[in-house]
Every structure is written in structure tokens, then in C-alpha cells.
Image 1 (cartoon, rainbow, N blue to C red):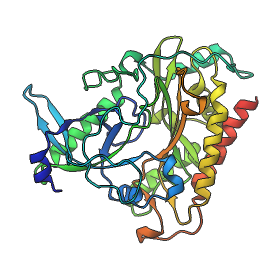
Image 2 (cartoon, helix red, strand yellow):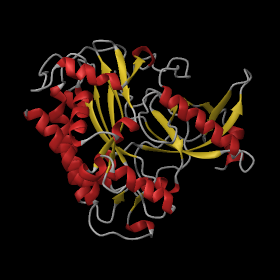
Image 3 (cartoon, one colour):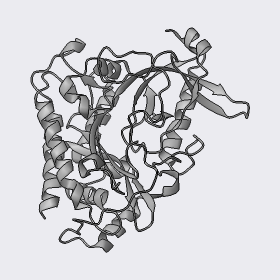
Image 4 (tube, one colour):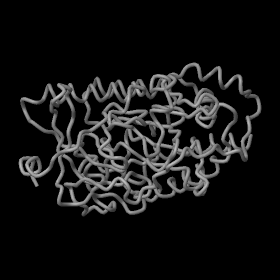
Length: 383
């Protein structure tokens, strides 16, 4: 269904900034509670349409396409509004044959929707050797503090749809997206966005780590200046030596009932030792290291490694890995349900079916970063 027909038959959905976006350069927007949308990349869309079955559990669920326009409301405020085919449901699986044009989804469909704040896990917490609580709190001074009331994942999550002003990063990207669409409005009155699962929706109070994976973060068809910029960022960060660097991190702190946020510039400056300390910060709740989630994280990382080793010709250049855990546990959930690992951002992904340079074997650069990440979590657990 085309733009004209969709706009005529759909009332549209106002998009709001996604408060838990911690990395990336494109705005990720909230379509509804368990669905997000982002500007469509042809290559990323093709990846989802040809997604290997054994990677399905490691990527967000693909839900289709939305037409997004820049519109001024009665209050004079400019919004981004998404239009979809209201007669069709959002894709219910990751099938390559899933509909490319989606409809509004029931906010409660299949997703866990908590009604209370949960409680802190008290078992199997400790401070690692040679690191005091005071040291970790001191290192946290490099972060931004955000009001937890704006981020709580319950019935009142993102109250009013606007998202508040606490997440300055997502607000900034939202404003930039509106400006970009304004500049391109003379060429086209709408732009296509891809609809994806909100992978943090199931968590009461998620802590999120966004990692840029691999040694090479460029595809090869970029302008020379852009390619050299990617090389410099890799060589001057942990990407070159570890095959992974931090793009962003948002961590819930129980002692202050607030979120701490670290951005990509923090991640680029880290040494190998600094990277390990940052992983410790990701697991630190203001009182103790939440050691209990590490074995689950390790299991999921190892399962992902196995799946990637079976992918011939795939290269996930500049893709990210999200590691998430529920900082406040739900009594009805198992620990395995309170941890998740997902690959995201496939704008520079390539494989044999895409008709470009065909690589042989699995993506060793991504796997190299994954091995170092596994070693970091394992050593932390054993120390």
C-alpha cells in the first residue's frame, strides 16, 4: 500500500523520543510501548528480510514499514507522525515473508507489562578485589545523571508520550531528525521508517550497554574521508585491540534511584583497563556489583558466538551489541528472563545474497570482539 492510500486510511501515530536509546547517530522513536521505529536503510531492511533462522533470537523482531511525515500540530509544535496500513497487523515473527507495511499493534500483545517497580536482587552480589565502592562511585562522576521517574518501565512508562526532558541524548537526535526531514521536505512529503521490537520493554528498570563490535567499522564504499575517520576511531580506541568499544551505557543506581549515562565519547577514550572498569560500572548498582547476572550474560554471549560461527559470508560492519539486564527484579521472572543480548544496527551488514564483495567464512572481526567480551565478563566473575 502506498503513501497516499495509507495516509487517507490511517489516523497516524505521533512518534516520541525513545528514552532508552544510549547510542547511534540516527533517532530511534517510540511507535507504541513495544514497538520502535528508525529511518529505513535499504541494506538493513534487506538483512531483516533474509535473516538466518539461528540469528532470529539475537536481533529485534522485524515488524514492517511505516511512512513518517513531519507535521505541525494545532499547538504549533512540530511532530513526526507515522502512518501504517491499519487493516493489517504488525508482523508476529521474523519471517522474511512478513508484511512490509504494518499496522498499529496492541500495546499488551505478548510483551510482559509490569505493574510495580519490583525489588533489588540481594543474592550473589559483591565488590571485586582491588575495587572499592568509593572508587566506583568516583568513576561514575564522568556520567550524566537522569531522573529515574522519567524512565520507569511500568504502566506509566513515558507518560504523556513526549518522553520528558531527562534523556538529552534521545531528545537531541529527535530534534535532528525533525530538522533533516524539514530540509528534505521539498523533495518528498514522507520518509520510510522500519518498525522493530522494543527489546527493553519487558524490563522493569533496565540497565543497558551498547557496544560497537568488530575491528573494522566501515563497509568499504564510503567516501575516503569517512573511511579514514572510521579507521582513526578504531585505532585510537579499544576497537583495534579488543574488537569492541562502548558506544553508550545507561545504568540504574539503587542508591540514588537515578540513571547514570555515559556516551560514545567516553567509550572512545577508554584503554583496555578502562574498558574492563566500565563493564564493572555497568554491573554496579550503587551498592554492589550484580554478579548474579554474569553467568546468564556469558551463556547468551556464547550462544551468539556459536550462531555467528555458522554464518558464512556475513560481515556485520559497524553493528552494535546490546547487553541488558533488569536492575530491579520481578519475583515472577527467572534470572534468564531478566537478561538479554541483541545485535542491532545493520546498515553496513553484507552477505553473499547482497551481490557485493562476497566474503568467505564467518565474521571473525565480530567474533574476535565477542571473545574478548566473554573473557572480560568471565574474568570479572572469577576475580
